[in-house]
Length: 58
Image (cartoon, rainbow, N blue to C red; front, side, top):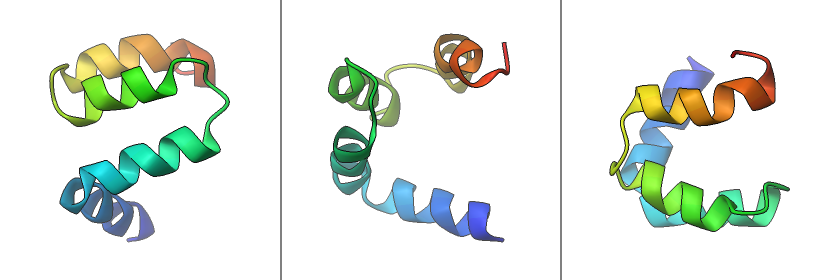
């Protein structure tokens, strides 16, 4: 349930989600990544290909 609520919150306020990622992430290019992926210029598959290896999924 929490994951579902988090997704809804992110989808309803993309700029706030991007701001939060920039504040909380240590990833060097997070602002560019967040803009590209959260504004849906990339597919979910592409996002997983990029970040999966960083968190053990790929």
